[in-house]
Image (cartoon, rainbow, N blue to C red):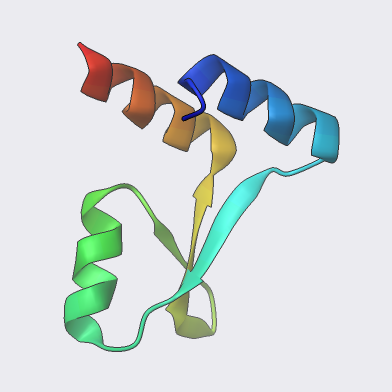
Length: 63
């Protein structure tokens, strides 16, 4: 399993800036939003999570 710093480093090296998901329904969308995913304008079922936000969430989950 990758540790969060490794996850972040890999993202930087590959040019990844965000995770993108397509919510299948409103319940799934609310699930993703609880973790900080943000809807993309004009496409409410498509959400993204900036990599830095994801890293902070992973690190705080370890505390």
